[in-house]
Amino acid sequence: MNRRAFLGAAAAVATLPATDVGESYPTESNSGTGGVTADGADEPAVRECDVCGADQPASMVDRTTVSEIAPLQADICWSCQFVHEHTPRKGTCAQCGDALDEDYPGNGFPIEIEFPLGAAELPAFKSAKLCGDCAAWIASDINHRGVHNDPVADDRHLRLIQTMDARMHDLEADDA
Ligand SMILES: [Zn+2]
Ligand SMILES: [Zn+2]
Image 1 (cartoon, helix red, strand yellow):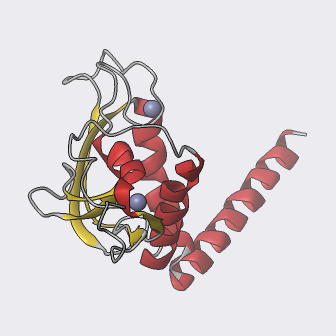
Image 2 (image 1 turned 30 degrees about the vertical axis):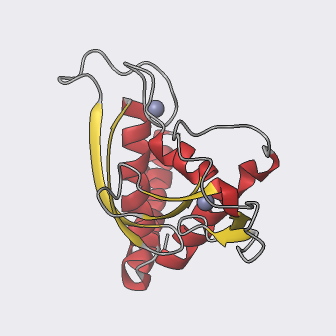
C-alpha cells in the first residue's frame, strides 16, 4: 500500500466512529478546555484533527500526544486518541484479539514499525504482539504485494507459476 492509500485508509477508519457524539471516550481530564465558552464566540466551532484529517467539534480535539508519537504533541480528536491509546487485553493478539500463541517464546510474535501517522504524517512508532496467523498474514502480504507491484518481478513470477502448472500437468498425464 503506498503512502497515499495508507493515509486514506487511516482517515477513513478514524472518521468512522463520528456518530458516537455524546459518548465520553477519553480518560483525559482536560475535556473542559477549548470549544464554546461564555466569551468564546470567536473560537472556531470545529478543529482539524492531525490524525484523521477531518474537522471535528473543537471541544473534542485536544493538543495532546498518544504513545505512538510521544513526546510529540498534535491536535488529536477523541476518537483518534481512543484508537491510538487502546491497549490489547492481556495475552491477546493486538489485531484479532485471539489468545496469543503460548508455544512461542515471549508469548506472541512481536512487530515493530515506524510509520507516518495520519493526515499530518506524524513520525510514529508502533510496537505490538500478534498471534501467529496475524503475523504470518502481514509478512506474507508484504512479500506477495512486493512482487506484484514490481512489474519485472511480477512478470517473472507469473511465468514461473505457468511453468510449474505445466510440469504438474505433465506429471499428472504420466500417471494416467
Ligand atoms: Zn481524529
Ligand atoms: Zn491475531
